[in-house]
Length: 292
Length: 164
Ligand SMILES: Cc1cc2nc3c(=O)[nH]c(=O)nc-3n(C[C@H](O)[C@H](O)[C@H](O)COP(=O)(O)OP(=O)(O)OC[C@H]3O[C@@H](n4cnc5c(N)ncnc54)[C@H](O)[C@@H]3O)c2cc1C
Ligand code: FES
Ligand code: FES
Image 1 (cartoon, each protein chain N blue to C red):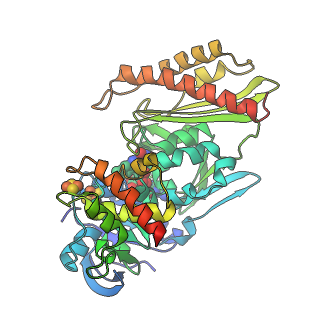
Image 2 (cartoon, each protein chain N blue to C red):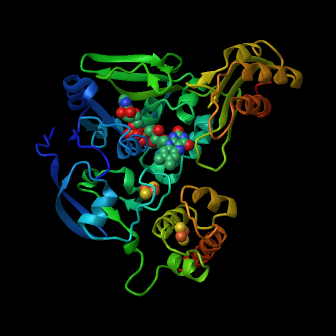
Image 3 (cartoon, chains in turn purple, brown):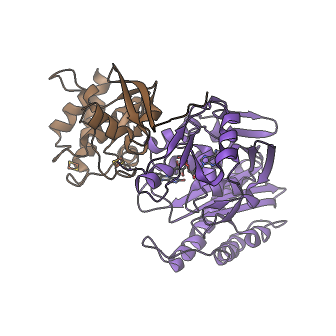
């Protein structure tokens, strides 16, 4: 027997989920796709008394686009978004990053809400939420609240969620047409967690940069936006020399760990190389999309 | 309805390889342990038991998933297919045939997971490139073959499947 014993609930409405969390608080653990929690239960690194399974809450599995942006219900599977070819034009960074999340069988179960809430600094979703100015819709028995992704990630594997709350939806503003983007990830084997990854998003108007986002995967205990590097681009016309300086600055803003996959110095070096490539690619795409 | 699991066990009903089963199961039992130990269907293998090796891959409502990190209770009222569903009697599935002909297996421990992963891959992409095959199979670990013969088997399988 792998997981330690627990009481198991699989309600079919959000209200019942919230009542259970209200009742059991810290003793309860939400089970979404189980692709992070499952291994933790098997290894008994997590031994919750109560499991509240969201898999029968049909109301949390949806996604829709309108003029305000894209809204994705927490229980939407990664593979559902992966298979929607429209997203490649409407949300190109998101669409490019999803195939990097583990493997197809992981993405068939793994959920958007689970990935955003699990807050692994080496995971794609948290950095994508930062790069795209995403917001997170949270609910408890008393009501709902919205948190910007930039305020959601508190410390390693810790978010702003309280034990009685669940993440119900993530929201991404619409893609700005005169923009360019790039998503680059380095890992030893396709599907492994990133050693380092970069999501870059640049908007150009009359050749000048009006908006820049550089979000880093694996650059520290939480997903990081290198805001000083970003601000060096604002109001400027893009040149290779500028991009090199920006990439150097971005790598200085990181606080990476050394582990068996790579040293902190190597990760910082990788960041300067990958940020430069990402910014070059993003500029090229922005120019093509009419942002010059 | 919130169901209270009084003794941590539940009665579940599911379909495995087209046959309906009804069993009482402890809620913490993983799907793979249930299929092997309760139902005695042992083609699905258990390797790492934490989601990284792919040996335990089964089809869940037609999609490949890792049955070591799912609970048996989660399969209640769903359908599961294991590697046993692929052949009909002695007639191997074309993917199995291609693995056999190309030495796509040695000890066979990883094979059930590879076969089902390849079945899903070829249903989405009937003519994959070498790079696509490598990327799609990167989540399945084989300690014997060195993978080259598996890639060859997948290419052969793709040809057989397109001929069908
Ligand atoms: C072999 C392997 C490789 C992987 N590779 C990658 C990778 O490269 N990149 C990557 O990003 N991920 C990877 N993953 C992790 C995978 O993406 C997980 O699916 C994801 O991290 C968690 O999503 P989940 O739906 O499975 O959540 P679960 O595992 O069910 O839950 C994770 C945590 O989030 C909490 N939670 C879940 N949903 C909610 C909610 N709606 N509200 C509040 N809390 C919630 C749970 O209580 C739990 O603490 C990999 C996993 C495996 C097994
Ligand atoms: S046994 Fe399930 S992935 Fe290894
Ligand atoms: S054939 Fe032995 S592990 Fe793959």
